Image (tube, rainbow, N blue to C red):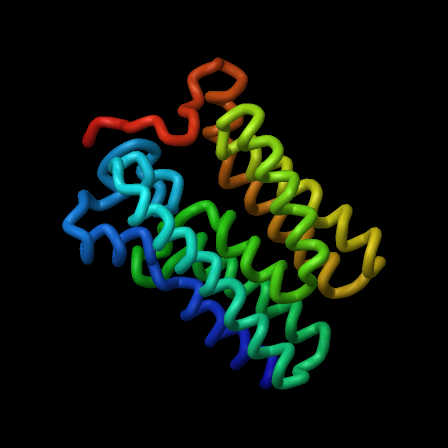
Length: 199
């Protein structure tokens, strides 16, 4: 019962669509109406507002970090913490407020993993930053970070609930980037900071 309640609350927190909320509050176009159509910080950046993108990124990361941090503070156990990690992430990807059509979950996953084990989160973020700076492809950086995270969990904590949870995140993240992978292979993927016209 505790795990189910914790998962439900984490999912609801994870479902908050900060990209849409921030854009509306700042009088910007709905991020689902241009660019990739993804309600996330990278697409919000294409609106031309760096502040909106930063606020979206912070909100998306926080909604992953907070439920996991609370679960750890309440000493709910490693299994429940792992369940909360997945639930918060899936809340973003399948947001109930957006008719279960959410974002790709990169920032939310990063926040959740950072709360669960800062070393793993730091390793994934370093990988993301390295690839993003070198290529300016957010999608490629996200995929590399998603692959690094389970390896980091295995290295520091071994096999366990958090490793399995991180593998789930990795699999879903790569799946959500299927379209980006196709564009990368065709040389058509947008780079970080590129603006897109409204559709």
